[in-house]
Length: 236
Image 1 (cartoon, rainbow, N blue to C red):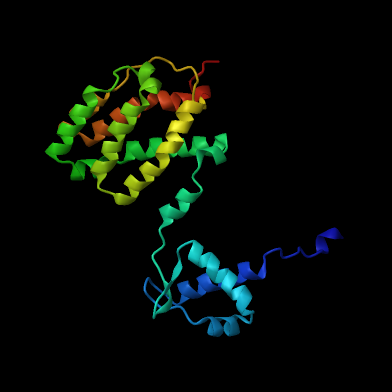
Image 2 (cartoon, rainbow, N blue to C red):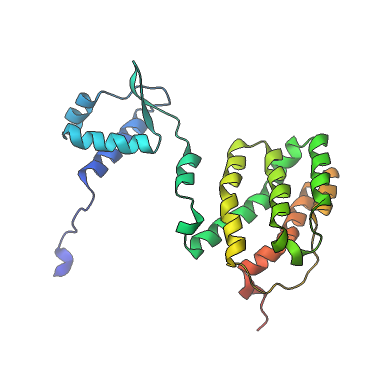
């Protein structure tokens, strides 16, 4: 009997207007620079008050989907997605599960960015990597006490990719990495294995061995994977 009761729609009117506007932009294939209809036209078409409409428009401005231009009115913009993401990327406001997810994302990015590195690396980049590698630790056991070296070497790899979004993303994630290291979230026993050093990675890059680079990066980051997936490595 109770199954016949209809659920209550808890979406506010402003939410519905916001979704309707986004759907309108998509259906009409509006692109950055295109004008948005005037408020009076929109409120009439949506059959809502100007107050509700403005609340929805403010939300769209906040996410960077529209903006007001002098003498042009409201136009569609190219939203800066990373800027929006960055506003909420505070390690102190994220729980352990989210921090772990972000750390895992970092590992996957670094193993998979070899194609971009090999496509765009220069001799000057290799020379700089060699200089950085001279200062980095050679043993995985020391990796947590040498986070600055890790950031410098891996940051250079991100730079070499030439992908501005990837570089910005890496810079945004640095506070997360540092917090994860300092907080002890990944401080778990690590099985001793062969560790691939920064110098060995540079040698592989010089040889233009893309497949070898992927394997080397996976082995270089192995201590982190062990800390993430410790149960998988535990003998019963």
